[in-house]
Image (cartoon, rainbow, N blue to C red; front, top):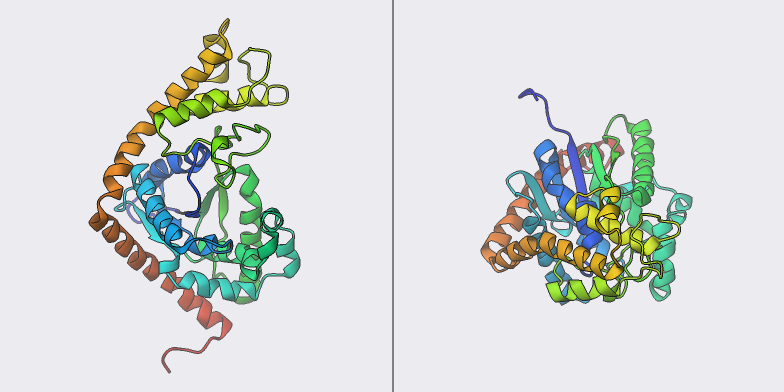
Length: 336
């Protein structure tokens, strides 16, 4: 790459709610480190999104620091990537309000995540929950993002962001970069251990997922209890053997072995041997991250430095976009 050729910008955000699990790691977190070598990356802890559902304030603050520590433990380098808390950059909320004025009710009502969360939290169907896609669009557009790492099931979020940006640009000119999805490779979709037809989720009971910070004995216990079938044949067949296929996906993701290689490895062996191998491989993958996490999370001065510098750098980048947005829509100038 020539010196005057700027790197493309990647933005990704994770909510600081619940325990990050193996699916989050394989599908997203593990890929963040390599991406920072190729792109200018912004990784946000999106705490404003978290409060669309009622949170314990103390727990939420702790989860924010926990997630930042995990970002760093997983290989993010604050000298190469911009790591920050969403709420520390007020421009996210300001741009979200502006974009609300260019987003239609029908678009928001069709979002599948709103429908899912509205069912789970019927007692608290608030405006923030309904309008979260415009805040998500603001997160992305604020930094003139080129690519957003997503799974196939999350492309709807990028589509509405693109629609909003294109609508705004059609009125005011080329204000926003139109982002593209950066679809993850194989292994980006890890399923629930108890119901392998459903995606692994940190909002489900803890015995359905492997948390990144689970102790080795806990990981082994969860893998042993994972749903399989009565056939005792290690074969990749998502339709007929979803439980075994899910464990094979996990094993493949952490060892790099192809499905055919895994099938050959366990010819004539039962699910007991297979599950022990899966547990061993997952433990070996997560233990170094857990060790780094313990070291980083104990260093409050370092976390404070990363947090402060990240917010300052993000705010400067955001200010460029917001200056243009304010001028285009006609908001009052700060100086005459």
